[in-house]
Length: 221
Image (cartoon, rainbow, N blue to C red):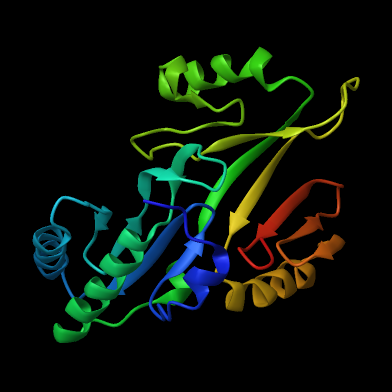
């Protein structure tokens, strides 16, 4: 399946879902663990082999949809959103509505770690071994991905060689487009400041001691 563009995903009208980084995410509120597990089972029966990642609790069910072998415009294979994910998201939305479950957009977010480096290949295998126990999880000279989802993804931001100390690690908080401004405002009100906002896809925030973090969305990507 071909990778869908950001515009195509936004035009799909998936009101319950948001694309964060490379996948579609949704959260539905439930009244008990039993109800959450029943909903998860219904989703599994609906998915017909294109299984979503599911986390069920006593108050919500989180869902993640992604195609691991999507093909981009250059012919490269990578994990991304395809029409298969959009169609399944639409079906899950209908399933949730039939059960009277409400979506909670405020509960959708994703934390990634970013690490500045001039040579990702030199350190990527180390971080894959440390975080996941397997150097094979260092992928595409770009990132470390834990297949179990227990650790945040770690991606490597290209930089020039430099002497330490300087901040090299930072957090990326992926959010729905509509919710990002309020989170930025809250961080500024709590003592931070905006130090870079020239692109719609991310805003750099800096705390009172000079540490940076980014609020990221798919807008403009």
